[in-house]
Length: 495
Image (cartoon, rainbow, N blue to C red; front, side, top):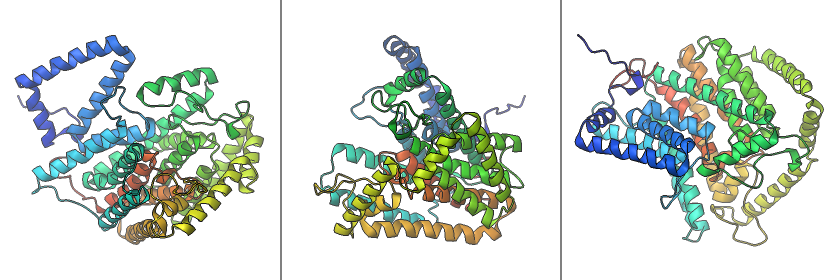
């Protein structure tokens, strides 16, 4: 009787998977299983069943990463969107984040696959690969120049996470090798974005005390347990609560949603969307509502810019959709009694009248002063070298300028401009389906770049998941351009 392989296609024909299966049938593999069982029992006694369950989920995620690059990428995006600040619940000398471990795992698997099967898999850098590596080299130079050769441990740790986030660019272009794989990852990102939006809305509608308890419970895996765990407009606990999900900061949460929402919005008007239309509408609605309730003005304007980009470049019907979305937003905000407060916040932000915007203006002036004093290479990624200056500014452009100087800012802008030129020029050569995917990644980057005018999270080494989202979106666009029409080497990609 012929044996039928019931595993998902993403898990078939991977050399690492074959090795793992072989190991589990050996005495060493049996011993490893015994150790794991003992660890589960001991962990249950020491930490409780919840953390054991979390550990098992982490173990399962690790096995997925080791057995399939596609499953690994899904795990990476799941952590970025749902548990971006999660760490191991125990100390091993250092405290790596779950995202860092997942990124290293995916990177290691595809590099080992490349070395083991060089006759089947080729290294893909894309035309932007070397410039991005050069940009990373320049960040390394700025790191040690600003720290005068000796960065502190915290800065080094955060910088390493930042580097891993940027290297996701190379993981995606080397793992996405077929149309099916690209479609699979796009579906996963949109669904995961909707899931994180749902989490944010769920926490928002809960009583503050219960929501606080749930978020503080994440303290075992690295989340804050004191201070501003719940966030409010103008930090007024008697005012409007802001949606934060598990992203710690509402502006970071809003920026993340803006990127994924723009990616999904492009699919609403595609002839062959990656998800059924009703599901897409639900996803866009969830993310849109959660974004509004972050009260992040930068994220709101980022989505508006992305929608204008899509409507101008291809989808003229999006103009009407924007009007309809605006009407729906007014109805929803009015029905929950916060429309006037929302309008007031947006108006005060545009006019730079509230406290947050006044602080931004002060940050901009300080950043410009730093760039004037250190125009070429900046001050690096540590503290400002002079006591009358303060590092940190709510703008990715000024942040890059003060951290890496005008040379670093010019390099970043050149890479982004080259990406847009390449992806726009190739659009007429792509079929309708792939063109819609590339347009979605373009819209996602437009949203991120617009958000970056007033927020720094997409270039902040303490928010490495945001940088990974940015470079991952850029990489996904180039991967779609270069996908092969047939099956990927070594077997079929996931449907």
